[in-house]
Length: 339
Ligand SMILES: NC(=O)c1ccc[n+]([C@@H]2O[C@H](COP(=O)([O-])OP(=O)(O)OC[C@H]3O[C@@H](n4cnc5c(N)ncnc54)[C@H](O)[C@@H]3O)[C@@H](O)[C@H]2O)c1
Image (cartoon, rainbow, N blue to C red; front, side, top):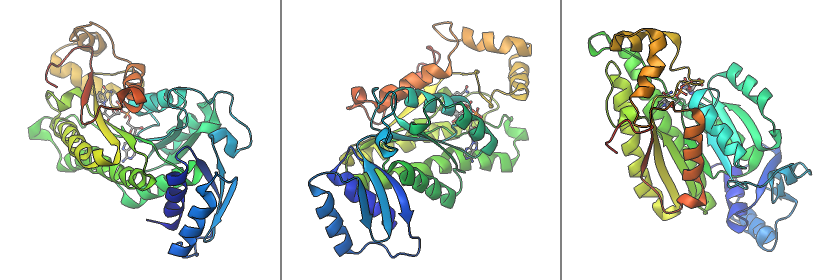
């Protein structure tokens, strides 16, 4: 673990409510020695200082994100106030919807995505920038993932929530499936979830006060859909990754759950015009009949919106779900019956 992470974990252990922001980080400085860390532990033992200096690292500390900037935010309340969340795939669709939902529930949110332009327009639309950070990250690239989590730590000093939503769904019949598209789906939907969960687990374990992870799977992870085999397999794989991680991380108070959304069209780049055309061909209907067709497959005969998925994510990350781990919450209006 880097020197910064060790220093932050030492502060978090003494003050689980603390937020920190890096003012100075001497990249050439060696990792803090045992003596440096013992001195730091002594310095923060009684109360949280406004400033901390340890082995070339200078930090501002506060009890709230607003306090870091010397201006308590307009609204630091909310069910997830005091928590920091990192969301992948947050420039579009469900990732963006969930990130906004966590932010509205009071969390500080790091919006990450590989899409730089998308992140730019997200940044311009955030109403409370004190509690938000946008950060480019490619979930398939180990160094990019580590750098993005470090950026989150430099800005907020802690991590409590991870939501993995960056995903793709290449729509091919088995006989036509290009292997590079198949492999890319494995890389983004499985390796990407693994790299982010691993990074989050390392940080949360070192902090010592638990955490919550939500893996966005799909109803296709429970019941396969046609011409979608890479998606079916990776979305099913995510469920079992999460169950295994829930088993491993429970002892640290880290909960890992999945959401399995039904079809969500609003804001989704997966449901682009080409994908809708292919879905229409598959069902033998016109493209403009696709959304009503899928809505009609649900028991509720209702369209599922990003807000519905965001509400489920906020619940799973909240104290109300404190005894829930290793579970799959299907938010599909009642479309598949295998959980
Ligand atoms: N829309 C649906 O109907 C639906 C249903 C069930 C589950 N889901 C799941 O929701 C998630 C998001 O789907 P969506 O429909 O919102 O799609 P979307 O394409 O609108 O959003 C996906 C985001 O992931 C980002 N991304 C892609 N590759 C990346 C990479 N290598 N690193 C970082 N970011 C990357 C994209 O830039 C994009 O912003 C996926 O995991 C998908 O499986 C979607």
